[in-house]
Length: 91
Image (spheres, helix red, strand yellow):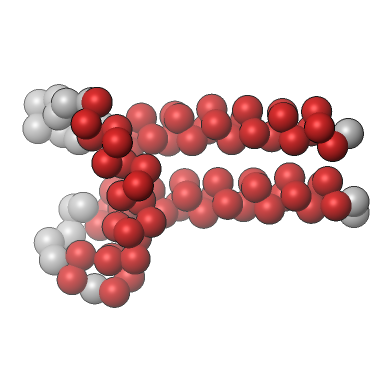
C-alpha cells in the first residue's frame, strides 16, 4: 500500500469518527444527564466545534435542532472534496 493510499484511508477514518461522534451526540441528547458522564462530555467537546457555528446560522424548526443533520450533509460534502483533492494530488 502506498503512502497516498494510507493518507486517504486516515482521512476516511477521521471523517468516520466524526460521523459516529455526531450520531452518538444525537442519541445522548435524548438521555437526561448524559453530559454528566465523562464519555458524554468527550462527545460534546468533539462535536461542539462542528455544531455551534451551524447553530448560529440555522434556527430551531418546531423546537427541533436540525444542525446535526446539516452537519452530516456538510461532512459528507467536505469528505468527498478532500478525497478528490488528495487523489488528484497524489495519483
